[in-house]
Every structure is written in C-alpha cells, then in structure tokens.
Length: 65
Image (cartoon, rainbow, N blue to C red; front, side):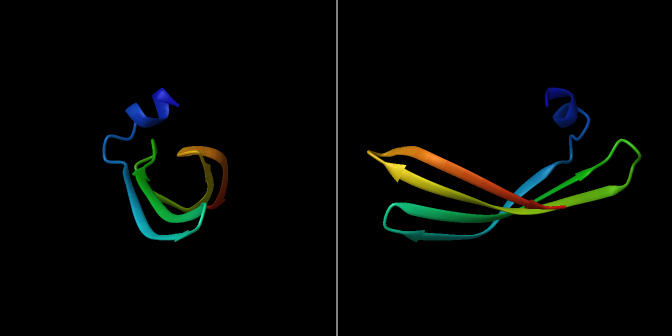
C-alpha cells in the first residue's frame, strides 16, 4: 500500500455524506488519484461501522470502481 500512496501524491479522499443512528454509522466517500499511466482514477464507496463501548466493533466496506 505504501508504494500505491507514494506514487499518487495528488490523491484525495473526500467524505460525501455521513449517517448516524444509535450505534451505527455509514460514511459515503470518494477517492481520486492519478494512476501510474497518468490517467485520472476514481473510486466511490461506503463504510458501515458498529460502535460498542466507544470503540469500533465492526466495519464493513463496499467499493464501486
């Protein structure tokens, strides 16, 4: 992963929206970077967290490429 991030100094991670309900949270995000071939790339996804005792108890991630 280090090589991936080092090769993408213009990488940008943006939170688009966040929903919180009781002990669950969903974060919609967009990740943009320039590939090694010079082309602009983008991924969108959502992470869903469950929190217990002020700690992340579970995290699920879904990505659309």
